[in-house]
Length: 242
Ligand SMILES: Nc1ncnc2c1ncn2[C@@H]1O[C@H](COP(=O)(O)OP(=O)(O)O)[C@@H](O)[C@H]1O
Ligand SMILES: [Mg+2]
Image 1 (tube, rainbow, N blue to C red):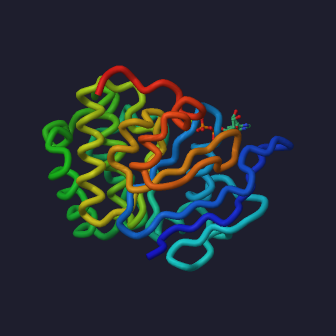
Image 2 (cartoon, rainbow, N blue to C red):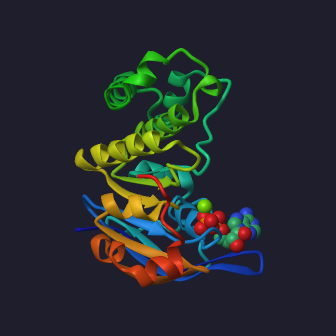
């Protein structure tokens, strides 16, 4: 069942066109990887889905209806949450305060917020231990967990993850990827932007490769993972570890 559908979207920053007729689809229950070199347009694609930039052409459907005209907060309300590149937690707020911001639309529903919080603690026990600590004092890995937890507080049906492994040590990367699979197993569809193509293709069901704003390859993750030519052309060398 189709959950998210991008239909030939075009996005420009000023006069520069950064996405050209990008079409992609995420089905219910899927992990879909969005790969490509730096500057290919991956973050812009996620920002378009979240309503942070508006495509000049094309359409974005969620659950069969266009979300193109909706403001960002309404898109969150529909069930799409984004975990931004570079984590962007609020350093001078506590772990718990950061999490609660993710439930902003339901801030007056104490039960709803607490239920969401319990789920995040289950997923990330380490965050629970540090719930009164300022987010700025957490390690990079813990901040990434917090950023993911904050997105989950919106109880999304679709989670957009932008480079969750960036700058993390290999063991932490493994932990983050295990968590992504666990979140997916709870029924949340995931669109995963990653530099680490090898790892992303291991957990993804399908994948798309962007190059200079266009989808150049798409298919089953396993097929893409075994395609040496593709890897050399678009994905760079595989990282040594993992
Ligand atoms: N706010 C912006 N204003 C102008 N150009 C931008 C902006 N954000 C990104 N770009 C440009 O758009 C292109 C795609 O960027 P981005 O979506 O961030 O790529 P990726 O996430 O794949 O690295 C790049 O050439 C980048 O320099
Ligand atoms: Mg990016």
